[in-house]
Length: 151
Image (cartoon, rainbow, N blue to C red; front, side, top):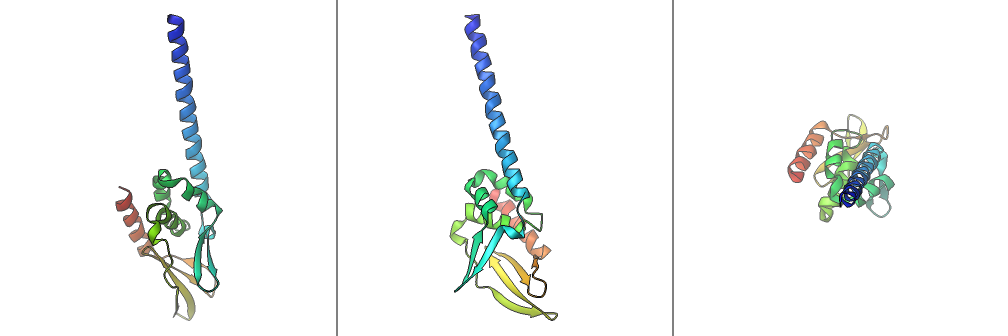
């Protein structure tokens, strides 16, 4: 009887350790994917209209579903990741609003730029230096939006 109990305890301990190890590996994989996100993690395909497409890393994170939401939320504060993280969260939680509004062409201080809006987040790309730009105020609005949505 004691032998069976010892065997049962060892098997249980082994299973618990294995499950914990698998969960940690999944978290490390998620964190690695998130660390690879940047402005280059999405594509604006301009043909007859402007189509928004997620890159490979973003698609992998999206496929993990709602379980990665808190990890993604933490990455929103990184300006280089804010827009693509917002896109991924939108695809996961609110796919019905995953569409780009008509890009707006504008000019300020002798610089032409295109303004893009997706699910209330506004960002733009400067034509003069081809840099993506995100206003801090818009970033804070989106962080607060997802904070309320995910809690």
